Figure 1 (tube, rainbow, N blue to C red):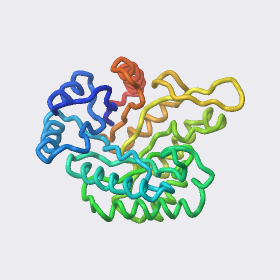
Figure 2: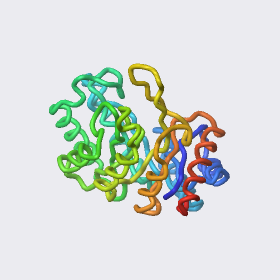
Figure 3: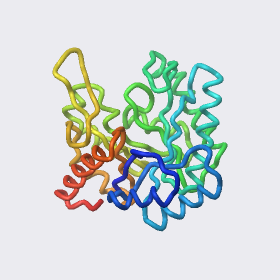
Figure 4: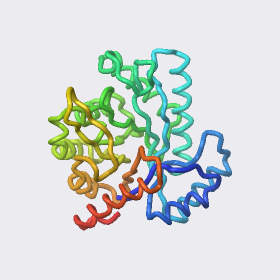
Length: 277
């Protein structure tokens, strides 16, 4: 696998981006290109990615294509199509979004998020995005989430079968599927189950950690890798069985020092398992 990073600063040119990734020992990265990039800049980032062997793991399409607001939904659909097309052009492993939400908050909980109608809407939405772009190399993926589809391995497999598009694949964030103390304490079992059912479909993964607070009712909080209870030995072991170029992207931190702290923990854990990064 390739350990990678979300961006802790913006970049004006591909050379400085690639230089930062190499300096910090990352072999993968989220896409550093904004929506206004022209063809020449996209091609320049693609060349730097190949020259320095830094894989662009994902192009984010963060938006709400199942919004109850028609104007928001239509704008999100166009955004997802544009970002999937960018992923194809820049050579990214995948384009990733969440399914969205039936709430006004694009990534928030809503009582209708797990309804049959919402499942059908997610299916139609993903089909529309993929069919508009017709990618040949990259994939459109949905990040696993705690309060909307897909929230489990079985749910993700159901979506794969219903969407029925070869360009639809899996983006795994195991922390986002830990939504109860039972799963928190047995997350290694959840991770093994996910890989056993969906391993061949996984194109990209997120790396973070999770803590359970000792106060009612239930409080789960993200943490820097190594500061929580995620079973990284199981996570890395299962990832190592897949494509050697699969990216594992550290996310949701704000400073270079925090990213390096999380990366140090993951690297030490991988070394103890004789897993190259």
